[in-house]
Figure 1 (cartoon, rainbow, N blue to C red):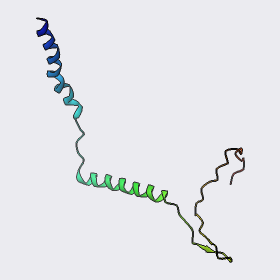
Figure 2 (cartoon, one colour):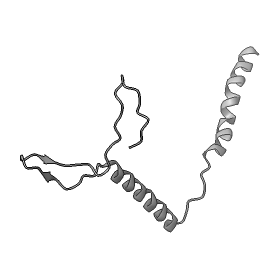
Figure 3 (cartoon, rainbow, N blue to C red):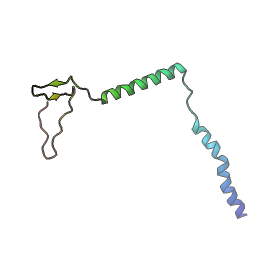
Figure 4 (cartoon, one colour):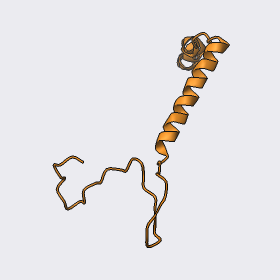
Length: 92
């Protein structure tokens, strides 16, 4: 009797497990192909914009009188204070 009860206690939950998980896999209706293409295009353009912003931009090279070549960034990174220096209160 105890073995039967134990077997039933183990088998019964497994019998209802597919029913419990059947509703968890429902996906929304797929969009039309034109909507999918529009969404994919927006995603690709956003990724391209992020990539272009991450690439540093430089001005044209300058050749100094002594022969040195300087290539300046168009948007220089803000200077970070040294660890021992207090941050400056002036804005640049």
